[in-house]
Length: 205
Image 1 (tube, rainbow, N blue to C red):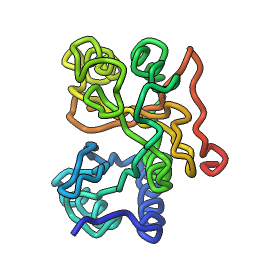
Image 2: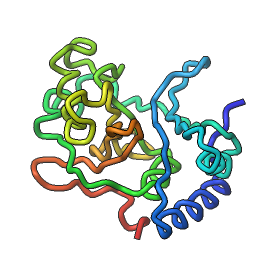
Image 3: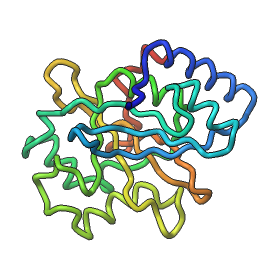
């Protein structure tokens, strides 16, 4: 049975994360976006198999190995809207990594709200270019080149903010990159040279 993050467990997670941040202890984890057997999209937090870090995963969602967040369909992400066309044509150009790392508290609060969508060079939402072309893949990989070294992250996931009712994509918020130690780190995206503000900024203060 999938272990989706509940509001109660989210509170536990926030407390644990804040404690970890205050004690300067790193939380090693990996994030991936995938489709499950029911053809539903999920964002998966995979904890390192070190005992203390597995315990953190258990506190978040009751699973020692991974926590799963359901990604609601983004119906208005499909097609060639002005926003999505510009995004896929300019990812890695106008849309870049700000190198401003965000806390797990901020990132998981954002995920738990459900107002998000993920894209990569393999995204089904890409109706602009051909699937996973070398050019598109390289532009996505460039988002993590400073973090991952020459190899780069194979398939960075970019996280969009989505309007809760219409499910319309609003802005480009985060990118997940794998660092040189093979751990995932979350960074805020930047658009046209200015760090983009999340729609949840007031709630994060």
